[in-house]
Amino acid sequence: MDDALKVACPHCHALNRVPAERLDDAPTCGRCHQPIFAGHPVALGVDSFAAHQRRSEIPLLVDFWAPWCQPCLMMAPNFEAAAGELEPNVRLAKVDTQSEPTLGQQFGIRSIPTMVLFVKGQEVARQAGAMGALDIIRWTQANLPGK
Ligand SMILES: [Zn+2]
Picture (cartoon, rainbow, N blue to C red):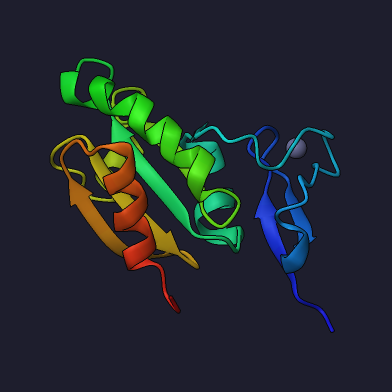
């Protein structure tokens, strides 16, 4: 029985096959040998986004932000804390809409911060405005399928 999930590495973005029941066992990347789950959001750009959004088989929660946005900066430590709780069931990522305007346009981001939750490449929920760590975790879990 093959219950392996494809999971993109946050360091080199290679796809790894990880058995679902091994997600909690601190798997390491077959290419770069770093931990696949480090408890931190991964910064994504145009070149790395699809590996995590479309090819990876765990849900992806993206924080669209910009360095000039004060509420974004206030939310950053909350998002970081949420990563420690939501991994390995969800990958958390950050997209800087100032250095990656293409991604902001592609997903129609009109205000920041905006969080978008993708499951199997499809957007399932989005939420604008800064949130606390607990609210990020609750909002994400409430929008995951099959819960
Ligand atoms: Zn890697």
